[in-house]
Every structure is written in structure tokens, then in C-alpha cells.
Length: 267
Image (cartoon, rainbow, N blue to C red):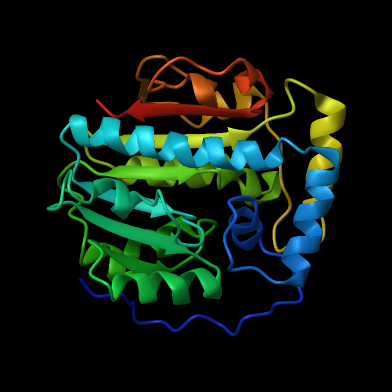
């Protein structure tokens, strides 16, 4: 598949921290700059568990994709994919569903550049430079429409990305447009940060994103659940991230992972 869409991404500004590069830092990657490290260290100074949360979130992505392939899904729209790293959607699918099609979407030029380099090695995916906050344009992007067939079931992955959308940018409306584009039999997977378990610490920790390209917006379980309106949540519903279909016994420290996760089906 092609690794490029028709639009070249803008030039990279490495002086402003970006959530995707901060996430790469938490995961132990190498694609980040001083501004990203400084902002991430500010988060970790308040919340040392932040790195564990990033790792647990990547593990949720793996469980969700494996579940979805088990439901017969072969088309994936992974929005806000982040820096390509071990455990990516296409890596999970390799050897499991080699006929699957994946479209990675991100608005960070570094993500685009690295994803395209990865695709050169034969990944079963393509990459599109687009912004979640402009869902109509995202869905109409040639890299999306040429690869995914929306007359057949599609899984949209919004893993650790909606909490970077401000309320003023209408996250509910954004998700509604994405849901409306899905045919019956499709799925929506979401993970999202919350302050429900420790409001003061969580709020202090995400202040590290205040100077980043996008702030971190913490939402309650009720608010996150609202993103699944019109969908049927699959078991176990909307739960703390490690408790969503764990592969084995859940570690006692799982309660410290302050993200919700869920997968909904459009019937």
C-alpha cells in the first residue's frame, strides 16, 4: 500500500512539546526532543505512574485489535496513532490477519515521517496526514477513501487521543460524525484519561501538557461513556483500562491506571 497521501505535512516545530512525542518518551522510544522530554518529565514528577499508564494503554490497543479481528474486522482506522513503535496496530495484525487494511492518521509531521518510513518495510497499512478535529476532511482524505470500504465494517481506534480535544472543539460532535460514517457491524474503541480516582494529582500531572501542542482534558466516566451513544458496549463495558478483557490476572497496581477503556459495536 502507499505510505503517502496527497498533502505534505507542515514543517516540524521541535520547540513545542507534542503529545505523540511525549508518549513515545514514556514508552522508552527515541523520537522526541528537548521540549517533549521537559514536558513529559513535568508530568512524571507529579505522577511517576504515568509511564506505566502509557505501557498499559499500548497493551489495551493490542487486546482490542485482537478482539476485533476475532469479530471478523479487517479494516482499521487508527486515529492519533502516535510514533510507530512495538505493539502498533499493523504489527499486532501481522501473522494474525495479513489481509487486513490499516489507515494510520495523525497531525504530527514527525509521526507522518516515521510512519511512512515504517511502511517502506512492507507494513499492511497506509498513513494519512489529517486532524481528528476535522472529521469530515479526515474521512474524505484520499488515503482513507482509497483504502477503506465504508460499505463494509470498519473499526475506528481512538486510543488515548480524545483527551487532547478541548470541549470547545466539540469532541462529542467529532465522535458522532465518525460513528455516523460507520456501517452496521463496525466498532469504535476508545481509551481516555480521567481524574475520577485522584482529582488533585491527575489535574496537577496533566498541567505538563499546558504548553504542549494540545492540552490534556480529563473526563469523567459519564463523559467518556457519552462517546459510545448509539453503540452497544461489548463486555465488560466501560472500565478502568487494565480490566478490559485482560489476558490473565490483573496486577494489584492496576487501580492506579487512570484511564477508561471500552469498545462499542454499531448494530
